[in-house]
Image 1 (tube, rainbow, N blue to C red):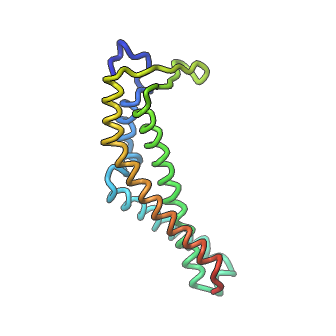
Image 2: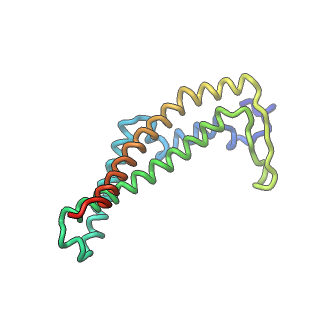
Image 3: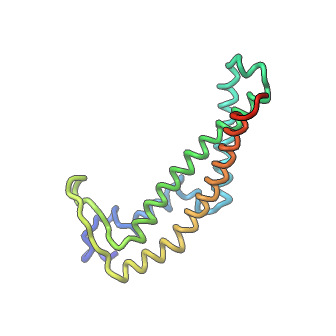
Length: 164
């Protein structure tokens, strides 16, 4: 953005927010579906090991080894779900700001919010960034979050309707 005509502070400009988010270690994971899956599997396996240790102290689960492993398996999916939700919220926020016609910003604090209407050239440029860069990232996150959610819900159903 041209700083001479744009009243929005540099760190609140959508293009700069996109660049900062792209540079971030955590938020760069979903740029590639394979890297996001790899990272989430690593977090899930770590959580699975932790949940196994936590569940091992229960006398209830010592009677059923299958329940012990299944509960740890399905409950450890909560960590990748939370990570995926956080990634989705961050990228969705940038997507909305890039595709919006107006930019809401604060000059010095939360109490002095302003709205600036983007010029057409800037809106087209940022809409292009939103559709070519951010939308595929959101699509990847939603697909992976859906798969993890289905697994977690199937675990809930298994425990709800089976007596083993």
